[in-house]
Every structure is written in C-alpha cells, then in structure tokens.
Image (cartoon, rainbow, N blue to C red; front, side, top):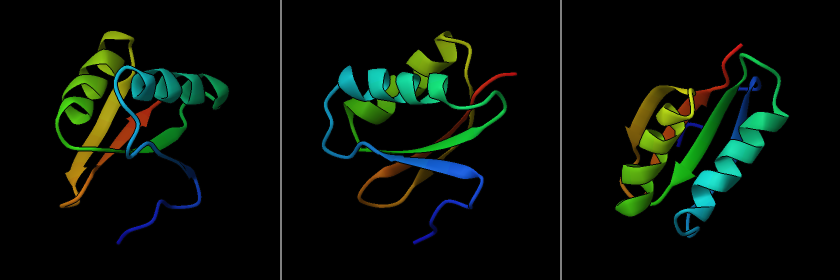
Length: 80
C-alpha cells in the first residue's frame, strides 16, 4: 500500500457516513495552508460518489481518485 508522501496529509474516513465525511474533509482542508495536498480515504458507494462532487462545487481541485480495492484514495488540493 502506498502511504502519503511527507508533504501530503492523510485523512482516513473509512466507516464515516455522508455527509460527515465531506464536512470533516472540508474542515481539514480549511486548516491546511493554500496549495496543500490532502489524501482522503473513503468507502465505496455513497462516500466516493458524493464527496468529490461536493468538494469540486466548493472550489477544490481533485487531483486523483485511486481505487484501492477495499477503499478509495481521493487526493484534493486546497486552492491558493
């Protein structure tokens, strides 16, 4: 399993229901410096379907969505 690099912050939200996972992701991004990269681990189904779209609507840039079999790794960058 690839762990995040030192300049990437990891937020493990597996088992966290919607919309709490979106709220926690947004709060974490707001605490980070502009331009930072956050890696969020999300469950399949509603979390990976809803959270990326909600973040995009809020102005965040989704860098990648990686299917890791049992969960998804979402990388999102806080805008400058």
